[in-house]
Image (cartoon, rainbow, N blue to C red; front, side, top):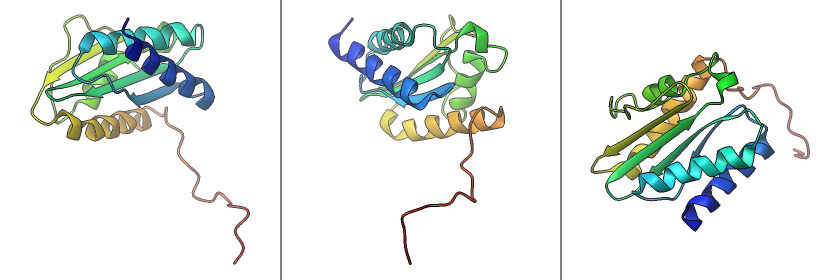
Length: 149
């Protein structure tokens, strides 16, 4: 495993643990190398251990947009990796890896502007989580303390 892939995977796993989120979407700085994104996902899974969190990793290089989705088996009834990936790529591509399953899905899209599309993928991913009732909405009536008029 490349050192950078392992480091990115550990960074994402730490964020998932600290946020205690059942589903998490993260950008990883692994450029155009699909194998490094796979290795980062493996690092996240290993670091999370038995913590059942689904996650999406998004990497954009010069020519590739790479998205990997991992869903623990016990969460597949809630969200499928393949379905979450397809929804996240809406308007960008319909091509995902033939090996994609309900627990692990991947897309490597060769495109002219991959970096610009990361925000669209992330936005679509959040929209899908919201649609499935898996994204906590911030309360509009939250009180903010410490600010005096």
